[in-house]
Image 1 (tube, rainbow, N blue to C red):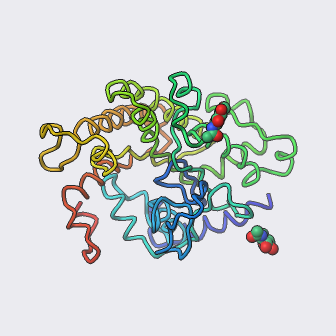
Image 2 (cartoon, rainbow, N blue to C red; image 1 turned 30 degrees about the horizontal axis):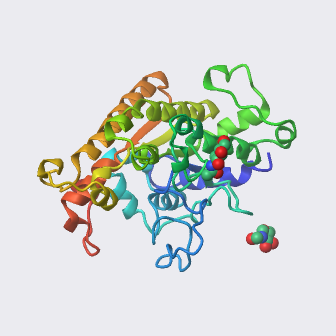
Length: 343
Ligand SMILES: *[C@@H]1O[C@H](CO)[C@@H](O)[C@H](O)[C@H]1NC(C)=O
Ligand SMILES: *[C@@H]1O[C@H](CO)[C@@H](O)[C@H](O)[C@H]1NC(C)=O
């Protein structure tokens, strides 16, 4: 109980904001890979972070990541995330810059307080387990054991210390899937369900590293496409685990158009002009893989919206946003300000 007042206070602060219809959050939890790792994998010696933070931070960026902007925008003053449409997510988050909270601590940070959130993302993290790749002779291409489910395992271990009672800690809190929740009304579970019902959870993107592990292991793109149902199922199972713990507000980003990445354009360059998109110059086969993944993910999210009508599941279309960077780079120049409705 001694843990409640602080988060409750933050919750009240944001509820008193003038955005009457805005969603209020007491905490932000993130699961992901290099797109959102804020320091779990510290690549010692790399200079990333120097420009914004003044020292290296372990981010795969010299500045902040999307999740930093989401975290800063949450509390206080509140950015009404619930009012964002999928497509305007990026732009609105940039509008939110400069407001709010300290940056989301990586979950491996010693001494950090996780009462307003934690970040479980690891650079190079896949959705699928070590075993999936090991069975296919690809596990030497994995750089970390931090799949989505391992990240959720860490989250579950951390939860009782954030929202459980001392009794729950000493007896070991029990968390079960959604359908067995009613018969497991242990105190820490109920407290954490209440806490999570006021938290925002971001799951992903996941998938990029799963496909990379196959592709960089020498597999053809056709063979790697067979991973898609496995990857999206792993993401779906992760989402259900989090809903089972009490999450009611989730953002699930898409994978990116990797065919536009300089790495892919270099590794898989082709003399056949039909391999490239006419407007983008991106490698079409690789973007098609991302499309295939995102279509499967969206279908799954639609199924969850029907299955869990009380849960808000927002698809964040990173694909479309990055695609727009490629097609309209001048729109995103330093000195140009954009209104959300222009995208
Ligand atoms: C951890 O927190 C305590 C109390 O706030 C502080 O005295 C100590 O210096 C911190 N340790 C590190 C490694 O930051
Ligand atoms: C991941 O775990 C497996 C065993 O489950 C181990 O063989 C492998 O070396 C680990 N990989 C890393 C990068 O730690």
